[in-house]
Amino acid sequence: MNTTIDPPSVDATTAWPTVSSPDIICYLIPTSLIARQCVALLGNGPHAVSRDVIEGVKEDDNSATHAIALRLSSRLQDPLQGFKFGRHPTRCDIAFGGKAVEKDPLVGLEHFRIFLDESGTLVLQDNSAYGTMVDRTLLLPSDGRLTSEACNARNSRPLKDGSQILVDLSPLRSVLSFTVRFHPKRTDEHAELYESNLRAYQNRSLAALAIENAKIKKVPYDTKV
Image 1 (cartoon, rainbow, N blue to C red):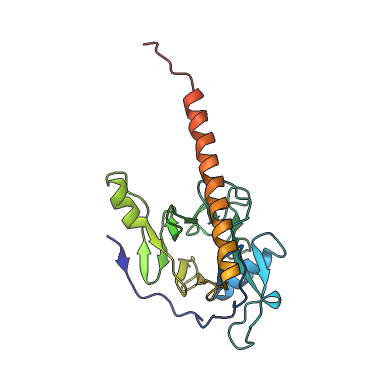
Image 2: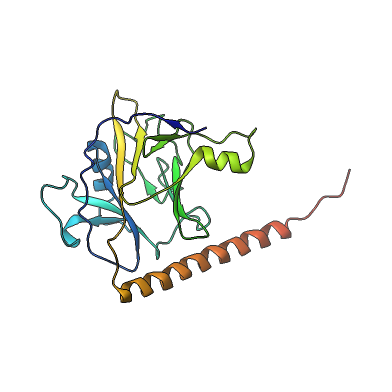
């Protein structure tokens, strides 16, 4: 069962992304000091965006200078896995760096992933040893004794606009925390372009799955006893 607990207090008054883009799935706005430091280290990378380029920013909304942008056009380490977050600098699409995180045992090398499921719903799945909190629910590591459905209920949760993501750190009461922000209602033109980009994203995932399945079929079966 998922465990619901009260999260540490963080600055969650984040609503500043208001510009619509047919390529953006959502933004993750850092709402804790360490999260802001980690995102700032991403610099001008493919998954970072400055608040200066997003219209409608209120100076008093949040002290973050950058946010993480999840884009349909992103070149992912593994398209079948979606966007992978964690400490590993090459296996993750968004690697958490900085002294406060890079050696913290509570942050997994591949801590969680965010992906679009077949219906286009954005989902977070925990892949860590210590769990990830989403909207006051602690997602727990998979248990091999459970069915796949039970595992998904235990370690996955859909994300919505305003969802809170928290990862505990070793220093007492320190967290990596983010607020999920989707775009406001898109114009008809942007909505059509977004749906087109979404289909292209899903087709790339299907193509990656076909390649993976083809590799499995090519593995020779050893009939020797």
